[in-house]
Amino acid sequence: MTFKDSLKKNDFVVTAQVNLEDAPDAPSLIRQGEILRAAVDAVQLTDESSTKLQMAGLAAAALLNPQGIDTILHMTCRDRNRIAMDKDLVGAAAVGVSSVLIKRGTKLKRNENTDVRNVFDISAVEFMAYIQSLREAQHSVLPSDFLVGANATVVDPSAGWVPQKLNRKHEAGTSFVQGQMCFNMDIVRNYMEHMVAAKLTHRIRFIMTLSPLPSADVARSMRENINGAIIPKPIVKRLEQATDPEQEGINICAELLQELASIPGVSGANLMTLGNLETIPAAIDASGVRTT
Image 1 (cartoon, helix red, strand yellow):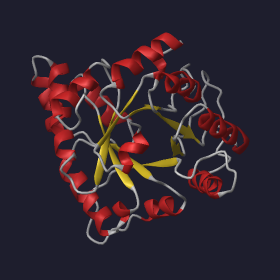
Image 2 (cartoon, helix red, strand yellow):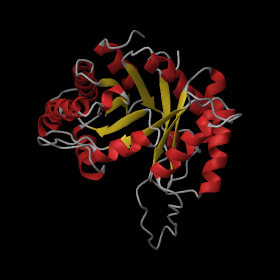
Image 3 (cartoon, one colour):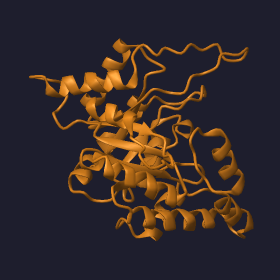
Image 4 (cartoon, one colour):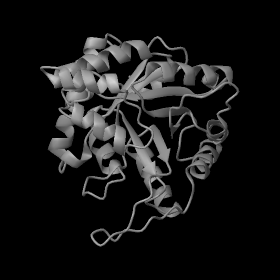
C-alpha cells in the first residue's frame, strides 16, 4: 500500500521523515527506511534549508523505492532552475516516485562561511501548474494520478477568513497539503473548519505535522527557529517535568495523533524526525491510528 493508494481509500495516512543528514551511505539510509516501513504509508525525503552536506532526495528515492518503501520527494524551488527541476522530476518518476511535495524554500543568507546563491527561477505554484500540464499531456512521462503536494502554515483564522493561497495551489494542481508543525489541536480544528467551509477538503487532502519531541530543549528550539511551528507552553512543561522526556514525547505525540484522526477534513499526519527514529513507530503504535 502506497501513500497514493491510502489517500484514495480515505484511510488516515501516516508518513515520516528520514534523516538524510544521518544517512551518508546506502546501508544507513535503508536501515532508517526499515525502521519506519511497517509503521507508515511513505517516508518523506526533505530538501532542507540547511547547507549541511547530505544525500539528495532523488538519490534516496532511488535507494528506497526498490526496497518497497514508498517515498514522497520534496522539491525546493530555491535551489534549482527550471531545467534542473525538470530533470529531477523525470528522474523521480523513473525510479518509482509517485508523489512530490513542491516548496518555495527558505531564503538562505550569505555569510563569510557560506557563499551560497538562492535560485528561485520558478515559483512553487508555477512548477505545480507545469506538472499538471505534464499529467494532462498525451504520452507524458508522468501518470495522470501522479500526486503533487504543497506546504502550508497552520493558522488560527478569524471569521470570514478565506484560504486564498491554498485556492491558488489547488488551481495549480495540488492534490494534498501538508501543514506546518502544530501541537495545538484547538487551532487545527478551527483551521480545518475553515477548510471545510471553503469546500477545499472535497478537493485536497490535508496532512498535519507532529513529532515525538525528545526533550523540552528541542521543543523550544523548534518553536523559536521553525517558521510557523506551534508548540504550546503546556507541551514544553510536560516534557520538562517528565522523568523520561523521550517517553513523554511519545505519549504526547500518540495522544495528538488520536485527536487529529477525529478532526473532520484531516486525512493524516506526517511525523518529523527530531530524535531517536524508533520513537516514531512507538508513537504510531501507541496511538492506534494505524495497525503496524
